[in-house]
Length: 387
Ligand code: FEO
Image 1: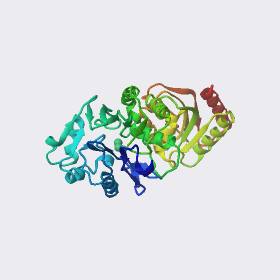
Image 2 (image 1 turned 180 degrees about the vertical axis):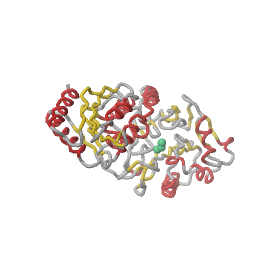
Image 3 (image 1 turned 90 degrees about the vertical axis):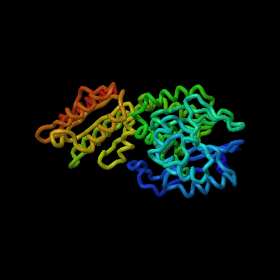
Image 4 (image 1 turned 135 degrees about the vertical axis):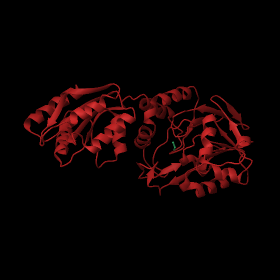
């Protein structure tokens, strides 16, 4: 992207944020995040979204440089979440003649965030399938409700075949981060949008009818090559299919005994040739563990009994999976308890509320420490899981 040009007419004016501590107040972003914003220059000049509170000054500087003395005619609001909308009011004050393009939900929510003078006169209300001719470029609006909020919309610019995809196809990590797209895009998608697979499938159907050459998301890199790869990943994730063969062993351990069992299981499972990822739920990035659970076709849970139920980190993990519509997986259970092991029953109860979960018949029950009988149970569990 030389000189921040996406194409001759589309200029990147977004900002990298490395100072952020937690994205959306909960996600670790060790490599920061980018808030992407774009300027389309034609007979009419269009700003595609603003940026977060943290990034307003730098964004305005980028935007003014790109405008080079011109005034924007339109601001397209793809998404009202504050990481993209925080500077709308300021931009509207700076350019009082600029129109705001959004859908019915955008304009229903907008006054909850901002006081915009003459909003009724300034609003350009669009619906699915509407288009806006700005000269050589035509902006076609594609509603994408719940990817990630109800007002989200994509814009497909049909002359240069550019899809402005809101949060979709975005990833954690700023634009200076040199890493493959996949892991941080999955962690972003599963945790933030994972619950809304049906809605994502609906918008992917619309996207499949478009000839797309460039995807401009609101976070992460602009995608210009092998776009079917990204579309395919979104299809897999939103249809809750496993992405790879492999097992996530997710454990929580109070004094290390459940951990020891989990490590033994990992070692035995690896000896069969299975790809294994082992996560201590109390210490790992929990959102990465959730992402891994969606990635693999098998999940084994190991938890001590705690307050006659599940040890807290495991309970939180399972509830998060349920909330994100985790489904269609094979699951094994290992419980531990000194006097009344009950965590297996409690984990099964949460899993039973998820769709198409096959729980292995072999449930391993540890009474404090692993014994030789438990080792046989682990072998049986492995045989059942990988058969
Ligand atoms: Fe990047 Fe849903 O906001």
